[in-house]
Length: 285
Image (cartoon, rainbow, N blue to C red; front, side, top):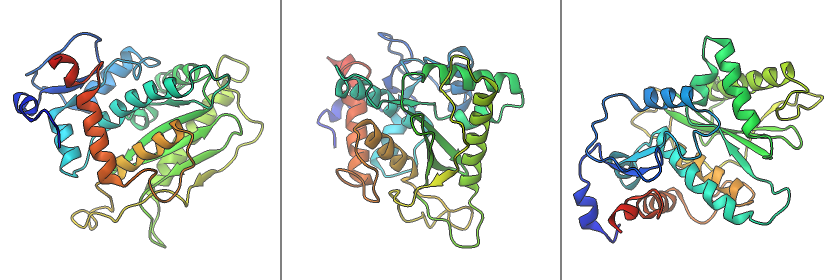
């Protein structure tokens, strides 16, 4: 799949970093992953919130690229890293445009941060991000429940909330993913109401419902996990696809814009390796 096969073989260690925006200009390889990714991201979030997707705390490992290529499940760091690339694309697309409909992205650990028992810390996390999103129209929340990724998008212009779930819930079964998304919406709305008049996104005078988007791209559930909890191997890929469509100002439809999940996986893997600023190509050149 990649033209520089020997380069990938050089980075064959499972823990090698292939895409790193944690510290600009600093490359660390053969670095053992001594703690879980989620713990690292939570530590990073405590240190920096507004800038965590602007070049801090995001790294792609060789195992992540393998998961993309092998059509396996991917972790939240892949979504965060792809958002970094989309942010750069967003700046190019909207360069010179006044009041562009730009997107702001919470990190992939936002649901865990919303569940923080320390209400003061939780509210500060929300407020810091809303302050950073002040000039953006769309606010994105990638959520993970039972290894299944969904996406909530808040339109600050009309006050609407949308929930994108690539997995259709069967009739008579409680949609736990929608419940989690609704809980997140209620927390953000509550924080907004408590801080009306302060420097945050303007709240609406009404509380619109959370819309479950019907025209969301979807895939067939993975049979290996369907009896444990229904999920799809491509749910995170579809989240990335929906985010990309918002960045490119393309209407979200049932079909993926410009291909399918396999195509998007290949595009993402290539982008991570070849990114001139943070990718493997940067070091090899």
